[in-house]
Image (cartoon, rainbow, N blue to C red; front, side, top):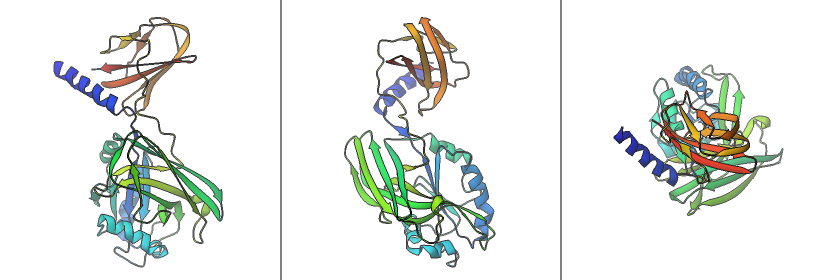
Length: 328
């Protein structure tokens, strides 16, 4: 028990330091080929797995000339498909890379455990994407919000992808998802510097191109450390607004007891007006909510919560109170 408490105290310290980190999207870069029969046999299970995580995963597919240069999606944009392939040293299809890490090409291409592990990671950077216009006057605005300085050879990479391109390929595949069509930055990315907390905005103009289905085209933005290939974070216009993993509010005029909570805790406060209570885990996910908290020293039950560290947010009219507790 003493060892557990020491671990929790250490974790509390870490949480304070990383208080502004946000969830990091899992970016799956998928190298495939429409003439490749192995791709046709392994891609469907990958797509099926990705669809289970619509709020956590970004996916983009590249089409290198491996093993067949006749692939029409490679032929549509040879230069851009080859750039990313060469950057990672991809030598076969299908291959996938999670957040710039190791190349994977087995069966399955990605496991549920691997995605779950990546989902648990956070980032000091959020990548927010907004799009506007149509036809020849379309634009994508990228907002980078950093909570701290980030070291390394950082590159902002923005590309256009087609969500679902339907045609019967030589290998029998009908649906081709998130197909890379064109870079809006240089293929090797636009160098950026993040030396302190703050925001940076970038706008890229583009127009519809023959061969695209305009309503399926969207911008994918990512920030990558070009030295170690780590993806810091990524974003699209389809994302929900990113919420900090932990709020920067300090405990304000409120206490709870006990702070090591098994089944329930009490709030040492008198609520003159009904208050809303929200409990978040360390990944910023809302795990419990109660709408009507009122009176003196209300009791809050937490049955069903797994062991860990939690953040409490209480809202009473224009007052916001925060506290934390541990479930051992």
